[in-house]
Image (cartoon, rainbow, N blue to C red; front, side, top):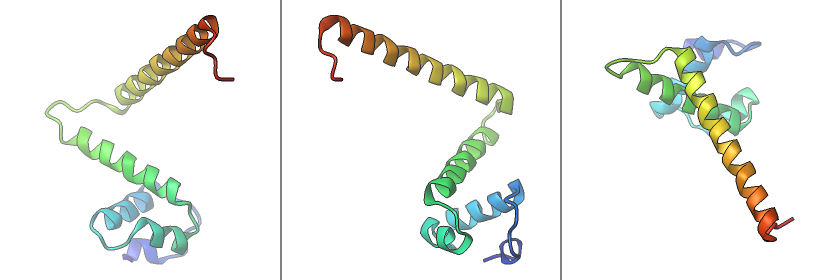
Amino acid sequence: MSAVMDEEIKRWTARRKSALVLEIIQGKTTVAEASRQFDLTPAEIEAWVEDGKRGMENALRAKPEDVRQQYERQIKELQEAMLELRARKKLDALLGTDET
């Protein structure tokens, strides 16, 4: 691994996370290898990779959103999804097709 990754890691800073994500994207290591080497869950590392991809996509846009706008958009989408789930559950209960 790179010099940033060679030292014993006590805290995963943004710089260390981005170095690991870059190595995974470049094919220098895999999620499984990093998981074993740094005692992290594969899901945690995969989340970092996904966050990195979203950040990279935003940075390459003609008019990038700021971080606050991104989070607000994500929260709004999640709230809408939760409302839809609740509405479906209520409809199922009213129609007697509730699976619980």
